[in-house]
Image (cartoon, rainbow, N blue to C red; front, top):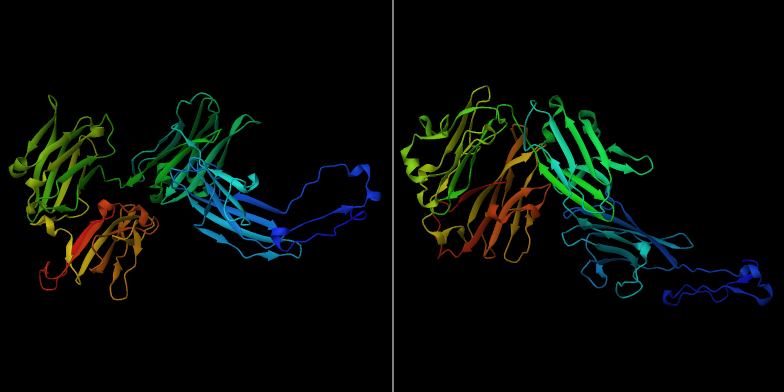
Amino acid sequence: MQGRGNTTGTQLVPSVNSTLMLTVKTTEVSCKDSAKFIFSASKISLEDVTGHRKSIYYHGDTVELACHATFTAPACLRWCIKKQTDEDFSEYVNNINTTGMSYDGCQYYRESTLEYNMTKEDTKTIIACDLATTPHCSNSNPKESSIILGNEIVDLVDIQVPQHLLYKKQSLSISCISKPLLMRDIISGVSLYKVTGKSLTLILEARHDNILQKSITKWYDPDLQYRANLVTSTINPKTNATLKIEIPFYNVKCWDASTYRCELVLFGNKFSVSQRSLSIMSSAQYIETKISTPVALNKDDIKIDCLTWNFETNDTIAEIVLSKLGSNGLSRIIAAQLSFSEGTKLKWYDMNYKSRAVVLSASVYPASSANISLQIPKHNVRCSDAGSYVCEVISIGDKNGKIPSTEKFTVEEITSTSSINTYTIGKTIVLKCGGKVGNPPGLPIWCRKTSHDINYMEYIGNDNLMISVTDPKPFECQFERFSLLQYNVSVDDKHTELGCALSSEGCDTLKPATAFAIKGLNPEIDKPTGTNGWKTSTNVLA
């Protein structure tokens, strides 16, 4: 063709009038020229580069896409998005990184990456990459430059993980089990993940091989592959699927305490998700003391729970006792005792608490659900209720334990509801936040939302104020850590909320119920108390 034709009239600049013209003289035309000719001005390819996750996504996941483009004239790359409820594409400009343009003497080359955070609205979202040769994105995006995110979520899988595990005493079993399938549903595979903050770590997956007619299992976590046993990996595409691993008790590690997720993948853009969290306790803990904090006088109820763990149905609990720790030692409040005639019998030791408290639940039988739950209504709360409470369980056997509440709580005596969370403008307040931060220990950060903000943003203070973080303190299989913030109340604090979250999870995980509400008042309205006008508050990180 090169010997018979010429390209007279070809031009690339300006790009809006780019022309490639091939002319073959009449005398040179032959029968072999009868064919279909295809013209291509550029090539764009879009690739999902989110590790092992290719097409199965859940809201909260982060998807990373890469766009590669070759073209004949200088141009910019553009990302376009179309959700299921949209009529047309619109330009997407967030979390994009585009390289400079390179030229090899024949054509231009450019790359762009996009990080997209999936939401519940992304049931069928199309993301495309194209050359910005037109003012707006449109439905005319080439098929090869677009990808569909999101699938139909169905409830077809269940995860079986114990809520609590005795460290070095119990083996850890994790199972992904499919539920009865819907008509025409066919299983493609099942995967097990470990959830850490916003990131997912694939542990292992099983896929059905249509040629071999069996399930193929692949490990992605070398550490767990070494410590765990693969118990079951079975996929019957039209009926069921089961994926089960077990970590022997002597191989269980503290970092196995986490959230686990099962994903069942079906043909036809369908998938199902189920996840559950596991905590690991020391072997001495058969009972837990939980108290609702913080407590404000005349504003909050006090709820005290004695919760038992690791008892089987055939175990026998003789007594659960709730006591308060005072200067003279333990003072019993109430006990739930085994009664062969009644099952459970209540015995009050402190008549003052009896007159003010309500027993929400109390039982020692069956042992697997034994507990005491006591509530003091807000109108009955006294300042003297502050302190440390202790729960004790006594069984017929070696499962006995006594444990205090994890923190001595206080009752704030607030006499005026209108003065709650109000501070003098110009004064400095001290806030404390923290709690259990995992293993390895995480770092608590401060998050702030003012009346002008929609979301919580990380707050780093300024040179004049100080944020201090305590060293991590071992707590069973994890660590405790706290942060102190000196905050200067300003005129901008009309309705400010401050709280803390783990740096690995970010401020968008902060719940308003766990944040401090700050409202600044003029000095003539709100007089400072004490000698320096400082106020110390405490909040516990969930």
